[in-house]
Every structure is written in C-alpha cells, then in structure tokens.
Length: 405
Image (cartoon, rainbow, N blue to C red; front, side, top):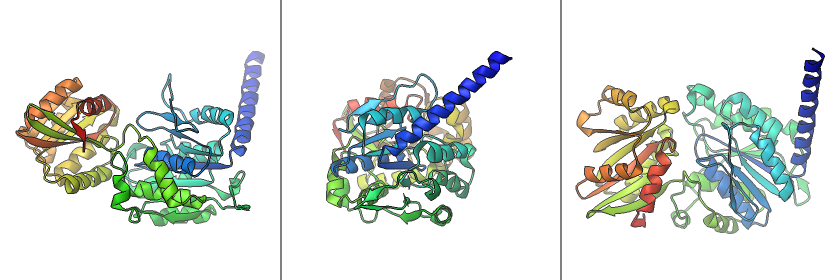
C-alpha cells in the first residue's frame, strides 16, 4: 500500500513539473496561433506560417492533417512518427522541440475532436494570442454534435481567453488583445457571443477580396476563404499583403490539398480531382460546383467514394449528398466496408447500372477500371477519406499524370 502511495505521489509531482515546464515554454514564444475548424485547418496553418516567415518572423508550424508534420523555421518539413493513436499530449512534446529552435511565432493545428479536449488544447496547451476557426460544418457529429450550432460551440472551445492570456503579443510597443478570425457565416453570431463572453475581438473574413489572379499563382487549387483568413492574420501582426502572398506561393501544400491530375491512357483522357480531404457533404458539394464551373464540360463524371470502416456515417452522408445534388455517370466505391455501402446505394435511388463496387484494391487496378468506364473523356471527383488506400490512389494518378490541370 505504501509503495502504491509513493508511486501516486511521484506521478502527481511529475505531472506538476511537466505542466509548469510547459507553461514556461509557452511564455518564451512571443506569438502563438491556434487553428481549428471543420475544413481547411491544415491549409490555413501552412499559409499563415508561410506568410509570417516571408514577413520576417522565425516561425514554426505543426499540422495534423493527412500526414502530420512539423514545419521548421526554414520551411523544411519533418514527419511526425506516431507509435500509437494521436493524443493531445503530443502537443507538449512538440513545444519541447519548438523551444530548442527558439521561434518568434508558432502556428499549431488543433488535433482534438472531443469538445473537452479542444478546451484543454487551448486553455492548457496552447494559450493562443490569435485563434482561427475556419468554418463549422457537419463532420465528426458523434463527437461534437448532430447540429451545426453544437459543432460551432464545440469548435469555439479553442478560442483565445483574455483571462489566461499568457504573455500578450506586443506590436509597436503595445500589447494586442486576443483575437479570433473565422470565415464561418451561418453560425458567426454564436462565435461572436462566445467571443464577447471571453473578452476576445472577433472578425469574419471571407474570400471575396482574394482575386482570381492571386489564386492562379498557387500550384494547387486553394480555397479563397483559406487565403483570406491567412492574409487577415498576417495583416494583424503587420505583414503587408504582397509579402505574405509571395511566402504563401512558395509554401508546400498539405498532402490532402485539392490537387488535380490530367491523365491520358489508350487515347482516353481523365481528369482526376483529389477532394478526399474535404470529407463533409457541404465542402464536397462546394468543390463539385467549383470544378464544374472551372473545367466544363466534364465529360463522363465518375464519383469515387473512398470509405473507411471507422467513418461509415461520413460515407453515408456523402452518398446521400451525391444522390441529391450531382448528375454523375458512375458512382464508384473503393476502400473498406464495401458490402455495407453497396446495400445503402439503392436507398438513395442510385441505379444499379451506375454503381461500381471495387473495394480495397490496388491503385493500378482502380486506374485501369476508371479508364474502362469512359469512352473518350471523363472527370473523376474522388471524395470520402484519404485513409484506407485513398491517398495511394491519388498518388498513382498523380504519378501517371500527363500534366497538372
């Protein structure tokens, strides 16, 4: 019994020392930025970090997107190798690494889904000066709630808090108040209500001010709202628009970024659109309209849904959305739980002759099958999940591209 008591006391002491050490490390970083939201977190994290670096800030970033990465002061990417499932305590280890590099600013993507963990990430682990909530859409509904209002309040747990504003950011000799930027429109009043309770300034920033010419300079398709948010954060700390943009153009996109590859095989042409990282219905439909407007006529439209066994609700939402809103020629199923999803297809009046069940097969076979489905020209809109082989499918198409679209 005495031994157990000593172990317990030792663990408590160790935890207290670790917590104190982490708070000390936070205070040594003049500018801390915390990124949350349903879609676009990884992209916005990268864009902001690149803009800050271009503006002269020694900046480090950490993403938890398709492939978790630390982005060093010089823009070099360092893979995060996990020997177990992602855990928010990882942020403590990341800040130990940050401390050795002595950055002036850090940009950290939230890695929590559960509301209480999001609260801990902000109030105990990051204590940000600037918060960003990209948007609040229907995703992770089992963890955050089945309604957008619930999801908005959950995401708002990562909003900066004036009462615990540790080491305020100093601009031109004056401390700046904590601030939140968001592109969310529908539930902005909820965020504003929370911000007022916490003494936080809040600004809604859309993508209307971002020009077509500015977007075309990116090596991939970037969402205007993501760029608008990143530019707003950079402007807040004193970086001019053109300087920030030049840094963003040079930055590497996330592995799950919206990339397009044009492939030619046996005199057939296929445009492959990787939208698998946008795995909520609203974002996916938005991308469909964007692609339809930019690349019309699309030829034969193949919707490729790559599913994960642990994200079945998400796949069902995407099946329902596609059936109701997209005029496609074929609905192709890859990934896990093929049999279950094949049984769902008839419920949404998707004709059997338009349904192609492939399951988890090699990317090469997916490539061949999709080309066999078209006569001369077609477009593949890949949606769902990058896991369960999804990323490998896109990489195969990208490797065999004739050119980027």
